[in-house]
Length: 91
Image (cartoon, rainbow, N blue to C red; front, side):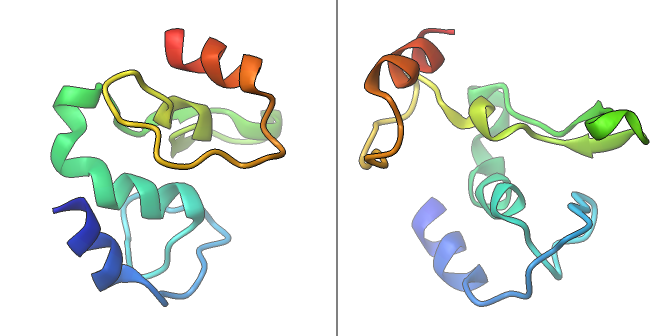
């Protein structure tokens, strides 16, 4: 399901406003959320109110929240320290 949703949504314009209520445009994090939201309750993953840059409240998901021991790790960027990855997956 996740793979099909991902393929269906490739090529959408980028969302520089990070608007989690409108998926016509997608930021990287919104794309991941859209692909995995069918598993939201299992992953305990949903947008929450945050105050980025202390300017305004915004519904968002921090990218680190996608690290989970409930998901298989299929790729890791060489720029990510393996120790940090293990810390994120344990928290």
